[in-house]
Amino acid sequence: MIEARGLSAAYGDTPVLFDVSARFSAGRLTALVGPNGCGKSTFLKAIMNFVPVSGGAVTLDGEPILKIGRRKLARRLAYLPQESQCPDYMTLGELVELAGYSRYSLFGGPTEGDRELFQKALGVVGLEGLAHRQVNRLSGGQRQRAFIAMILAQDAGIVLMDEPVNHLDMTYQYATMSLVKDLTRDHGKTVITVLHDLNLTLAFADDVVMMREGRIVAAGPVRETVTPETVGAVFDLDADIFERDGRLVCLPRMDARCRTLAA
Image (cartoon, rainbow, N blue to C red; front, side, top):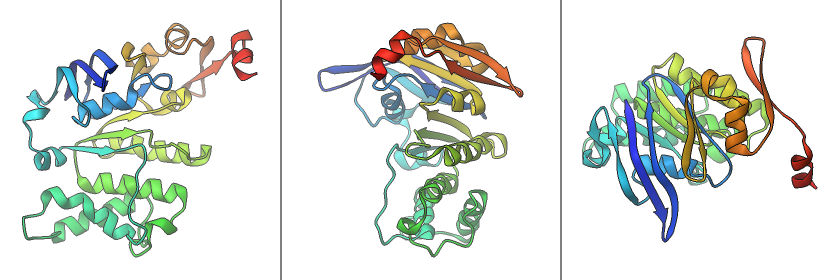
């Protein structure tokens, strides 16, 4: 269980988060959604203590994250930023091998068990047999799966992802989110991810945290939380939410305001 209580954060003199609280249940995929600049990515960074927090606290299984050493924390919690990069010369195998750093001894490297885990991670994302290939020679979709393999190889129980489908076309968005969903369903991971597309959220997330202007507007199971009322409150958008083939769909209405913004 990871929990944020009363988090407030700012960039310099600009407040970004205001008394944000949320509990993330084990083994579930939670999506953070909301307009650009509402604080979603900052919320993830505040959980990781990557930005100065002026109030509140984050606990992991009841223990304050600030009291957990970085190497120990890396064994329990993995973070995939919005823009993931590596040196041009690095191979896929070398990239995935970095994930085991928190488990290595001071003068040691990967064990046989580590190497088996690396191979298994590449197999899960469908990149087995490509460990020798340079990461910059992979396609966009393959690169995204490569970084997910690195997260898998870290073998942490909780995974934080900041827009894992950013810059991907629709095919790779759904393929990547299917893979992310598998992390919870087949591998028992707890996943917290920032998403922009409500329909991706409705298709794959178990829970949702809906944010606006640095505050949480609504949070809970997707089917109970994403409603025309909450979509309107968060996005200033009229939308219909209906079920199609067993899953919810969000269909925005192209009203006068939308046409004005598009003009």
